[in-house]
Amino acid sequence: MTNDNKPAQPTDLMFGDDELERRLAQTWRTPAGVWGALTTVDHKIIGRRYIVTAFVFLALGGLLALAMRLQLAQPEARFIGPDRYNQIFTMHGSNMMFLFAVPVMEAMAVYLVPLMVGTRNIAFPRLNAFSYWIYLAGGLLLWISFALDTAPDVGWFAYVPLSGPQYGAGKRADLWAQMITFTEVAALAVAVEIVVTVFKQRAPGMSLDRIPLFVWSMLVTAFLVIMAMPAIMLASSTLILDRLVGTHFYNPTEGGDALLWQHLFWFFGHPEVYIIFLPAVGMVSTIIATFSRRPVFGYLPLVMALIATGLLAFGLWVHHMFVVGLPKLGESFFTASSMAIAIPAGIQIFCWLATLWGGQPVLKTPMLFVLGFIVTFVIGGLTGVMVASVPFDTQVHDTYFVVAHFHYVLVGGAVFPLLGAIYYWFPKISGRMMSETLGRWAFALIFAGFNLTFFPMHILGLEGMPRRIYTYQPEMPWAGMNMFVSFSALILSLGFLVFFVDVIRSTRSGQIAGENPWGASTLEWATSSPPPCFNFRRIPVVGARDPLWSQPEELTVAGGLRTDRRELIVSSVVEAQPEASESSPRNSIWPLLAALATTVMLIWSIFSPWAVIWGSIPIGITLTGWFWPKQTPEDES
Image (tube, rainbow, N blue to C red; front, side, top):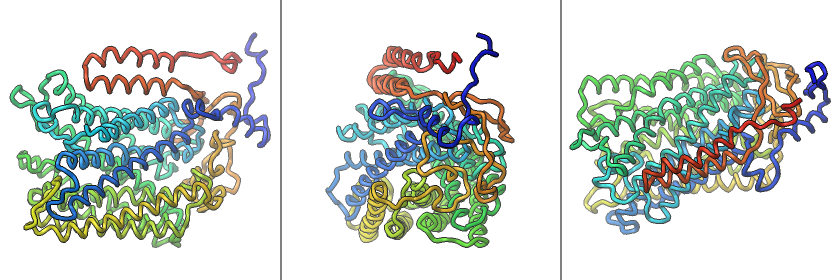
């Protein structure tokens, strides 16, 4: 049969809205039941899983923090022994950084970015499914080891030689290193998906200067992940080789260098702070614009500040190492760059304040969390400039001053916007509104509890209290302040409890939201809440930066996509002009099987180097099944 005799392919131009929705739902649907749950590649389902899993890890990490505060509430407490305490503070830091902070930000992107750029699925959807299963396996590995009393005990930074074969007996440090591999593989996979989705799957007309600021923030974050996380994977892999195979990357007596670990770790570790913070910047910009009822002030400066922060983030890592005896000239360079990064942060703050000043702010719960973020992040930024100074940092290094600064930057700078974003996008994800009353209570308790918990830690640090100690003597002048901090941590925990109760209650019985309850301007609100499996009945054509505010009520739409297979528009990088249509992979069990095979190999390799060889065989089999070409009737037509 020649091409001329082929029947016309069904496209969205041939059908009315109702028939088109029926056909698209049939093509893009996820099957019901266990099989559908295991095989789905729908970015919304996977994004929800990521978000829920990350918040479970947040709750578990918070319980560990309460346990530490209970132990430190009074001198010479015996609630937790030294070994278990070392496991707990290692688990708390590792859990919060690797299993919550980075994954939850990427999870928000997995759900929202395809909707915000006007496409029907994320790029490489099977890789997206694989990334979630790998992330879940890494988290379970860490927490099962804790339940078995074999959790890592070397800190979330795992400094050598403490984590090396000389001092790190057993498999605790190996478990930490392999958990890193799991989570970083997942993060790198998601980063690649975000970059390709933003560059090649934007709706027609969404040129680079019309991309929503949250999407810009996730794009910069994805590049940071791609460039920074190979460093920590290299560090953890060489650590395992030292411990398991007998190499000497970090053994000075055999030509290695213990300081190499710190350089590799912090080359990743400081950009990671901005991998966590930059998505929060995009969330803040989105929420402020919506609740100020005007476009954000300084779109271009905000975009340039995002990019500048991403670039400068790679010039800061040595300020974690000011006390190791580096050349003074090198320290001065990193002092300067550590202070310079405050400039784009200041630009962002002033743009947000100008947006509020020129708008008509509505103080709903998402806005309250954003205002709380501005206050706490400014405090964290000021203390960051302080510890960027070598003389001051030398005095407060490894004290509770650094603990306070760290939490002001990460909790104040990332978790506050994240909670605001959950309240903001919850209607989009669930179709229901969260409680405004419970939301205000949650904000008040979290804001008060956070500041009452962590601000006094600055004083404890200035009084000389070192971090990572499990007890202290009665004659030290820290008992009263520690008791106050521990009590305040209960207030903070109560705030999060109210938040979780609100989420669970609203999921079941919250007020029906409607399509766009906030009157927002970005494309995710141009479809139903929650969105259908195909996201958009017809792909919108974007003609403005705030399309739901600036364009007519009925968005112009692009047509021509087939309805009998999962088809996406591929657009040009700069102007988002349609270039082609491309099929999106269907549901598949192979990503789960590949993740299981990878999990077996990585856990096996903790005990034997031969696992890398023999474990690669099932991985190869699953990848062959994953990429095996399949001819379907739609391809034959």
